[in-house]
Image (cartoon, rainbow, N blue to C red):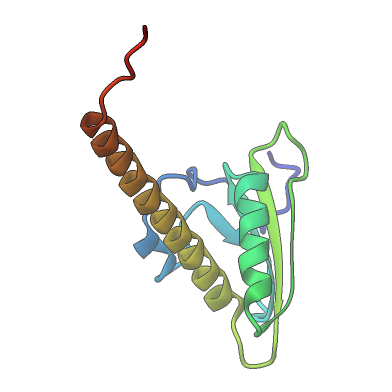
Length: 134
């Protein structure tokens, strides 16, 4: 809406991006509100607490990050804001991209582990015989 600050713009949903998107420029669905490279608020369109909390957690694991927090201003608006403050000499963009990449890596690992467990279950299930009931 026009009442929103001009520093936030509406963009396409974030959900369909591949991990490689995190290593280059920020996706279109992410906007920044600062020209200071160390203290930035990002706005993600189409995201909520699921990404917000995971991103905050991954950011705070980075020793170059002084502060990371997120808010979902209102449930009826499709926005999630993330505030990042970094040490001198570290760009917030780099930390956010690294955190998003780490989240993607964790998701890949969980998916691979799950798929292996399903295959093992199916294999074990085929090899076992049903119990005889008298």
